[in-house]
Amino acid sequence: MKFHFHLLINQASGSGRGQKVGDKIITLLQENQFEHTLYYTEYAGHEQEIIRQLVNTETLQAWDPQNPALTADQPFPLLMVIGGDGTLHQVLNELYHLSVDYPVSYIPGGSGNDFARGIGLSRQPEKAFWQIVKAQEPTKINTLFYNEEIQAEKGVVINNVGIGLDAAIVNATNTSFAKKELNKYNLGSLAYVSSILKVLFTQKGFPILVEVNGTEHSFKKAFLCTTTNHPYFGGGVAIAPMAKADKNNIDLVVIERIAMFKIFWLIIKLIRKTHTNSKYYHHFNSSKLRIVSTIPQYGQADGEVMGERPFDITFTTRPQMIWYKKNDHKKG
Image (tube, rainbow, N blue to C red; front, top):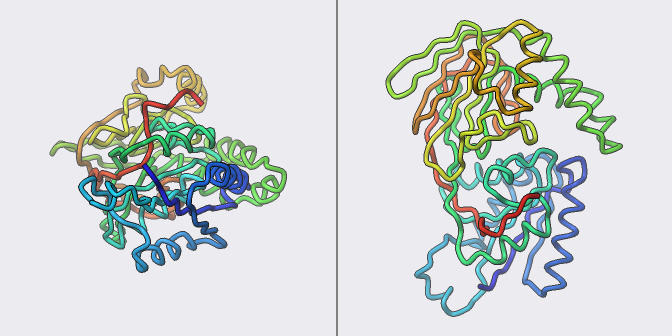
């Protein structure tokens, strides 16, 4: 199948990794004489502007295998996003708000790249590229759709929404002076580790109400509350090993606040992937669920900080077409 690739590249993602990945993919496109057009993001929110431009000019099109143009061997205009999970998050949300349904391809160029892990897409740029090129049709992937009632906020999530610990870590990392300085030397991950240690000692338990399949579950001292689409968060941590991105459901993990020495033991269990056996670990699975947190807490959606606030948030599932060939994936 022939493509005309429309590359949306966030060079700043992953402390500059996006630029390096973008250069590798452009070289591959040139060497193999693939038609392509380049779009570079230059500031926060530029992704949305680029997507609006592509939609308004009808540059992209929906996938329809019955379209005569495809059988005529004309190149299909395929959007290829190169950047971190946050870049893909912004792109898919803009497509949602514009009420258009286009397949999207993705080359991971961020720091965590949890979405690639979760769907079986290689995190090595060249391998991911050929997974995309060899696919004859897109693959339907599950994503999460959230509706937050208090602030009337709606959106699409490819990885997870967290309330509590993980969101506080993201906020602390993004607002730290150390991150800005360490990023200059590609050591941004050290700022993340520093934030984890800080928040572990300061994050307090908070009450939440979880509604699943008509049944309410209340927790007086929740510590971490993560609604996820696949196993991973935080750059490869399998917080919900049972979750699968190709299943039409939602996984919710709630971990209760415990004594500090028990937290470090739980982290060890998390590394060993035996944490699901802990009595402080609670897992729920459904096609729809609701979370109510009346005490203001930090929230994050795909690593984007939602602010410190109370939440009344309902989750459902939403399909998204991602263009890649899953069977070609090998570890990496």
